[in-house]
Amino acid sequence: MSIKISDTLPLPNSSERIPRLGFGVYRSPSAQCVQSCLKALEVGYRHIDTAQFYGNESEVGEALRTSGLPRDQIFTTTKILSPAGSVEATYAKLLESVEKVGGPGGYVDLFLIHSSSSGSAGRKQLWQALERLHGEGKAKSIGVSNYGVQHIEEMKAYAKIWPPHVNQLELHPWCQQRTIDAYCKQHGVVVEAYSPIVRNNKANEPTLVEIAKRYNQSTQQVLIRYALQKRWVPLPKSDTAERIAANADVFGFDLSADDMDLLDSLDQGAAGAIVEAVENE
Image (cartoon, rainbow, N blue to C red; front, side, top):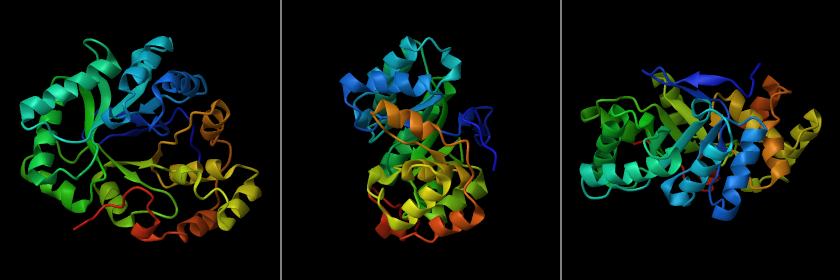
């Protein structure tokens, strides 16, 4: 399966495309985040994933503007966690993020609802605010995170943009979320994988270690490659320069069908989640 770091995937019902590999900045401290993002861009990442909840949108924006790269060559994502009481107030919260990441008059490439946890009325309010933002060109694409099948189906009743362009989920061999993954693929929704290296919790897992040795790669590299071959968009996070580079160096080897099957066999369903497995009904 030949993949390059510069490869992109099409978003549904959109002319926009998303890079196959993203760089996550979850809990990256303000003082460190700019340097980490600049390192990521230096080694070839063209996709940075932040969120209001992470508290470092401004730092991502600073890295964008410091990098010297043309704005249209970097794909930026941010997320909103909860509605603000009305579509108008929620939209105002979205604008604050766009300004932090994109600068005055700027834009973000993708804006996600971070969680399904605000109830059906809250989810509707969030989506309607995002649709307004998208209509004004301030978010080139819009999507969801931690949404199960029921949450995406529910949107049909009010969404002008359906399906969402992206669903970002916890995905790795121990938590494969097969029901929602298959549903998204069926509808053309791009599936992003957060925590693809399981926050290093599985670095010594015997099956993974054995596979990594076979390819002379790190366990992290095997997990990122696995995600790519599942046609997910992995979002590995690191604040260590060497790791940031190594996590992007996953395009020179292919996991065999047998080794993909071996990794697939590790699935523990919802029990394998370290953050959240979605509910589909």
